[in-house]
Length: 255
Ligand code: ADP
Image (cartoon, rainbow, N blue to C red; front, side):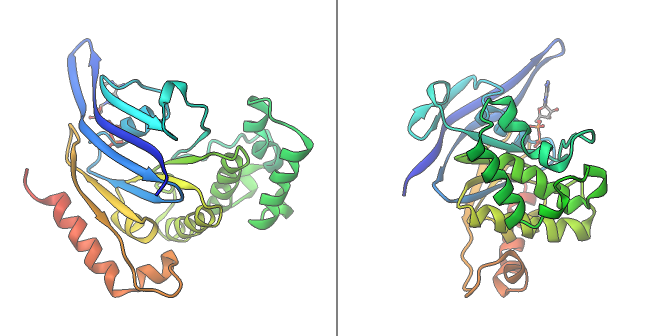
């Protein structure tokens, strides 16, 4: 299996005037090409910190991060980041929101615009190109945000609780929908979430973190005996409950 991301013995602590807050202790794992890995852990344990380190927004105190075999600093790999809020600009149309990343990275061309149009078409937003974000549902907005990320052709997608701002019902459908788009586009993705059912319905593997400072408690591969391995079919399968309970127990067991 081709590795797109490798973390080895990562340690990180925040330093403030009040002292030191250790956030991550000895984190090692890898992400294979086309794989979808979910990271779960209690709120405040260090999940977003981990994604910030991979995105290069923070630098680890110890340990190494390699992307496509190169140290993070030397890597030219494109990393896409999707956050809790879709960060769409109301004063721009959906089309111009989708082009924003391309504009910022000076990648706007006939070819990349055609790709943006193709994705808007495939994922049902063609008729909303000239609409503004407030005219779209929460789910459509997240699709637009994902398309804005996908047109940059990222090798790795980092998803930081991207559905948690949505209400429960919408979260289910949008989570399943976005998960399927990521599969279809064959992206390698790292999803951080505190929602266990989201993790079990979407991922190939779940990494369970301990409370802060986070260390890896366990890694659980998710195997479903399904003809069509969609998030919805997973939710309705007998394995779903078993995995959910297993991860729940592991998260809640005493240190
Ligand atoms: P999670 O994403 O799992 O909720 P975070 O990675 O956001 O957790 O935060 C981990 C811990 O680090 C938290 O306890 C938080 O208080 C602390 N922390 C986060 N950002 C900072 C910061 N800029 N300065 C100091 N402490 C921080």
